[in-house]
Image (cartoon, rainbow, N blue to C red; front, side, top):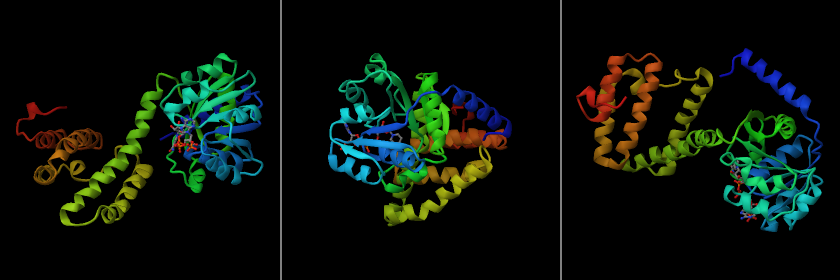
Length: 317
Ligand SMILES: NC(=O)c1ccc[n+]([C@@H]2O[C@H](COP(=O)([O-])OP(=O)(O)OC[C@H]3O[C@@H](n4cnc5c(N)ncnc54)[C@H](OP(=O)(O)O)[C@@H]3O)[C@@H](O)[C@H]2O)c1
C-alpha cells in the first residue's frame, strides 16, 4: 500500500510527465469492438474524449458499440479508423495484434496502442517503421463484454509502455478515465502480466476447484459458488483493509497442523489430483504466516504435515 510520501512522489513524477505532453490526440478510434474496446471506448467517451470511429470483423459488434457513444461511427474497413483518428487502439486479441497492425497503412502524426498486458510494443513495429508513435495501454481489469464494464475502468491501474512523448499523452488519457498509470518496460511486462493472471484468472480457477469439492456432499457447483462468494469477498476486504501478511487467516496462520492433516487425508481419499496443489499453496501460506507472526516451530511442523512426513529435513523451504 502506498504511503502518503510515495503517493506524493508519484503525483510529482506524473506532473513532470504531463508537462512534457504536447501531442494532440483529440480523435480516438478503435479497431476491435470486443470487451476491452467496449470498456475503454465508453469510459473515454464518458470522460469527454472524442471517440470517432470503431470497427470489428462482425459489423454488428461495431454498430452496437458505436450506438452507445455520441458522435461515433461504426466502419467496416479498419483502415477508415486509422484515417479518421489521431490515436488508434488496436483492441484485438493478443495473437492478432501484429498481423492486424501489418495489414494497415500507417503514417507519422498518428499514435497507435494495443491493450495487451503481455506483449511489448514490438508487435507494432510496422506502424513504428512508418513513423507512427507506438505504445501499450493495458487496463489491469477484467471485462466480460457487459455495458457496465466501463465503470470498472476508474480506479484500475493502466499499464503504459511508450516513449516519453506518447507516455505523457497516455498518462493524461489514463488519468482522465480515472485510471492509475503504471509505467512498464518490455522486460517487466511478462511478470506484470503473470501477476495479473495469478490474481484474476487463477482465483477464478481456485473458485471452481473449491466449489467442485461440494459435489462430494451433493451440493451443485453453482450453489457451492454462491455459498463461497461471501468468504471470497471477506478475504478481498481483509486484503484491502489490513493488507499483507495480516489478511491471512485460517489453520496455517493459527499453527493448526492437525486440521491441515485432516484436509490432506480427505483430499487424498476423494480428490487425490488436488493434493499437490493444496501442498504447494500450503507451503506458500506457511511462508506468509511466518511473516504474520507464526512461530518457526509450528511452521516446520506444518511443512512436515504438508510433505506427508515427520522428518523436517525432507520438507521444502
Ligand atoms: N477482456 C479483458 O478483460 C481485457 C482486459 C485487459 C486487456 N485486454 C486486452 O484487450 C485486447 C482485446 O481483448 P478483448 O478481451 O477485448 O477481446 P474480444 O472481446 O474477443 O474482442 C476482440 C475484438 O477483436 C476482433 N478480432 C478478433 N480477432 C481478430 C482478427 N484476427 N483480426 C481482426 N480483428 C479481430 C473481434 O472482432 P469480431 O468479434 O467482430 O470477430 C473483436 O471486435 C487484448 O489485447 C487483451 O489482452 C482484455
